[in-house]
Image 1: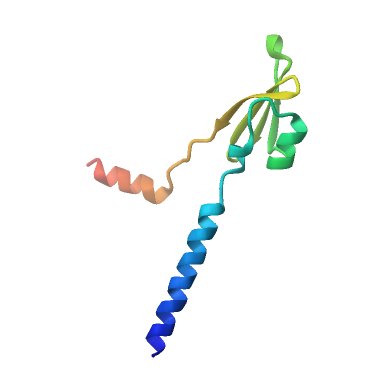
Image 2: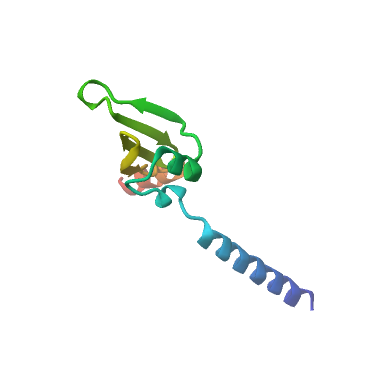
Length: 100
């Protein structure tokens, strides 16, 4: 009797987790070329770092986030670069073991 209740509770918890995981998208996916500074800030919040253009590209600004970079020309987005996920320590060890 207790096992049936435990199984049902685990099944319900698994369904909730699946629905929550499906709804978690990268906010950087919502940023599109042509958006203004304020639009990006509403979606992504303040950047971790701001890089200003130099020389010929003085009108370019790059906002750096953990998920990637948003590049502006003037006040509008011209390019979005997603960060490449770095392998974890465990994944690197597994790769090294497999390469022997």
